[in-house]
Structures are given as structure tokens and as C-alpha cells.
Amino acid sequence: MPRSRYDALVVGGGHNGLTAAAYLARAGRSILLLERQDHLGGASVSADAFPGMGAHLSRYSYLVSLLPRQIIDDLGLRISLKRRRYASYTPVPGGDTGLLVDHGDPAVTAASFAAVGAREDVTGWDDFYARAGRMAQAVWPAMTEPLRRRSEVVAAIGDDAIVRDFLDRPLGEAIESAVQDDLVRGVILTDGLISTFAGAHDTDLQQNICFLYHVIGGGSGDWDVPVGGMGAVSGALEQAAREAGAELRTGCEVTEVQDGTVRWRDRDDEAVADADLVLWAAAPAVLDTLQGRTPSPAEGAQVKVNLLLSRLPKLREAGVDPAAAFGGTFHINETYTGLETAYQQALSGQVPSPMPAEIYCHSLTDPTILSPQLQESGAHTLTVFSLQTPDRLLSGGDAERARLERAVLDSLSSVLAEPIDDVVLTDRDGRPCVETKTTRDLQDTLRMTGGNIFHGPLSWPWATDDEPLDTPAQRWGVTTPSERILLAGAGSRRGGGVSGLGGYHAARAASELLDR
Image 1 (cartoon, one colour):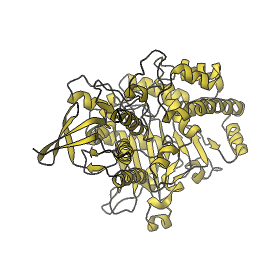
Image 2: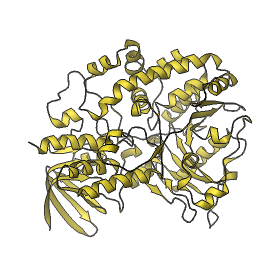
Image 3: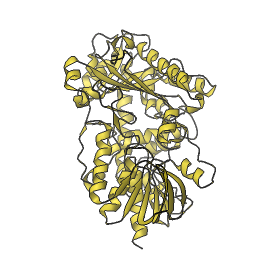
Image 4: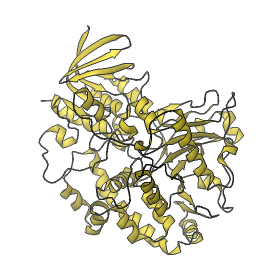
């Protein structure tokens, strides 16, 4: 059996693994990256979801907020991110009005608040997100540094009320104190429920942690559209790693990981390599299983549906341009009480009805993912992402996927002036251009345990005041039970989202260890 030796082995070829490989290779280290699938990119890929139609969609992840400018500059990534003018549009369920939040025109936003009966909440909304912004400006700069302690973060925020509302007490209490309208409250709460199954008042504060990650990106919380789709991001990282000299292999399923040794199946052959360090850029639960430990718990809470439409659907509200409504995040049946009801329904084992979900339209901001013919025809893509849909509700199978898909589409149709099915394009075989990915699909295809896009419950991006920060792995938040294995993916301390931070932090810790 051939046996090679490297400075570091990276397991997992998603965007975090590629980030780690690129940084270490640029530092002159010998790097081998192993990816189980036949392509690189992990969840950050683009695909022709509907063959022959001319639409190259972001299949899984789709927006960028948490990728630091430092990583883009350090690695010379040639990517373009476009900012969206509109923050969101939220139709009133059963009504003919909706809340449009327009970053480009505060007067339009204020008029929209008034139209849905929430005139008095404009000030509370503005103040709530201004305070969240101050928190973001204090927390974000530390994301590319070794872990700060909580007391240092609190001092940097410098406002006891902000700390109390966002870090100490359930997010629901802060929302209910800030605004009164049920629709407005719901829009805020959604920021704390992305692939996070939680209630507004849960005491473990998972909703607070999710909210924090959702609003700190770049210090502003803006979520940008990657030109060319998510595949352009992972493609740029792959190019950076290859140009730096990293060896990248696909079709390699790792079967054993010990201190400094990795075994894998490379098609029909067995292979093994040694290294000073192993950087694990896959789900921690998979590592646990390989090493004989009880897997870390992980549960996703979403269904993702990609659609190709002949045109944007009509709205019930005549005064709002669909291009504005779908130009940001389009919220579906996401009132505050509706989200709490959906949470209780799922806790009792029921699929939420109506299904709370939200949409983004990539092609409005970046039409390059569509062929010239589709662009000329007025076609658009929609990506729908459900909330409060935990993996525990699923058992797997095509029939179940179809049932969840129908629930998502029916929920969307309920807030439109026409059924969404009426504007879905069909492919050459007459099949609707609809692609649905459940948590089980993510687990089966990407080995994301429980379909959790964060690889497990999110953690606060800082250390407690009494935990040890003596080793490089501890200081960078990438520890495992083995000193020679570092977490390098979304399951590391600050690795969630398309940020590259899991790979960046692992590479920084690895560099310190290899320099000894």
C-alpha cells in the first residue's frame, strides 16, 4: 500500500477545507486534501439543477455575509459580491398588503409599515437593528483573531442593555419589548431561526446565537449575492489552493483517522498517508464515529426548494413591484405567532402548516446564472428555505420529499395572487423545474449529520472567562480530543455559514503548531 507523508492532511473539500489548504500551502507546507465526492466545493456549489434548461443554480448554500474581506484579500480570491437594495418583503397572510423594507428609501419603508398597521413600530425597528449593528461592529473584527473571552466582548460592546437583550435573555423578550406588531416581530425572529429549531423564548439561547451570526457579517449584517453563484466562491478557493501547491484529490472516502494517519478508499484501492497534523473539514459527528466516540448531536431544520420560473409571480399588493418584493428576502407565513405555532407543531411531531419559509431570487441581482435565452424571456430563479422543519420529522424517501415540497409550494401560493405552479417552467420531458433538498438529502449527499448546515448547534464566537486557552487549538476554537487533529469546518467554534473561518482558524492554529 503506497504511503506518503505531508505536513498536514485536510479531510473535506468544501469551502472551509479549501480555505485551510490554500493558507497552509501558501505558507510553504505540503498539503493533501481528500474529498469523498467526485467534485470539490461541498455545499458551496453551483449546478445545472434542471439539465438542458440553461440555469446554473446555487444548489445548497446561496448568499454570502460572513466571509471576511481579509480571507478574500489574503488568498487573492477573484470573486464578486453584489449588495441588494431591498432587505425584505413580507406579505400579510390572508391580506393584500405587505411590509417592504427598502434600504434605499426610508420613506418607502415607513409608508409600508403604516400600510400593514405598524406605523408605531418604525422607531422600535430602527432602534433594534441599530443596537444589533453596534454589537456587530464590536464582535466582527475579532472573528479573524484568536478567541476573545466573554468579558472582553462585553467590554467591546460597551452597553449593558445590548448585552442583556442579545446575549443574556431569550431573543423573544428583546423583540417583544422593541416592537408590537405580529408581522414585524416575526420578520425579526426569522434572523434567529435559520436552520435552527428554536422557540423565541428557549433558554438555551440557540435563537440568540443564530441571530448574532445573522447580523454581524462584515460588521453590517448584509447578505450579498455571489456573482456566478456559490460555485464561483468555491471555485476561486480551489484555484487558490491549487496555485499554492496543495494536492487536491476527489473520490476519496476516509475510513480511518488516527493521530497523524489517515486511511481512505480511492475508488477501488486502499490508501494511507501520514502527516504532522490532520485538519478535519467535515462534520464532527463523522469524526466521532470513525474514532469510536458517541457522535456529537446535530439536527438541521430546513427544506430547500429551487425553482425556475417563466416570470416572477404576481403579488396581491398592487402597489409593490415584484422585482422589489423578490429583490431581498421574501418572507412567507412568518408572523411571530405563526413561527411559534410552527415550532410547537413540529415539537409535537407535525409538519408545520402553513410552512414558514423565505425566498431569495438570485437572478434579479445576478442574471449571469441564466442563459441569454432565459434572460431575454424574463425567466427567474427562486430559492425557498423553510424554517421550523426539524430533521426529526423525516424518515427519508421520495414520497416524503414530495410531501414537504408540496407544503412549501402551497405556503408560497397562499401569499401570492396566483399559484406558484402556474409560473414554474417545465423541462424538455414536461417535468416541473423544481428541485427539493431535505435534511436527509444533505446528510446522504454531503454527510452533514442530521442535515445541519452548521454541522451542529451554533456556539457563541468567544470563550468563557474560565475556559483554558493555552494551546493553539484552544485559542483558535478548533479543538478535538486529539492534539494532532483540528476541526476545520462549520463545526468549529466560529465556523458556521459560508465564511471560510473554520478553515482559516484551523490553518492559523496549524501554522503555530508546525512552526514549533
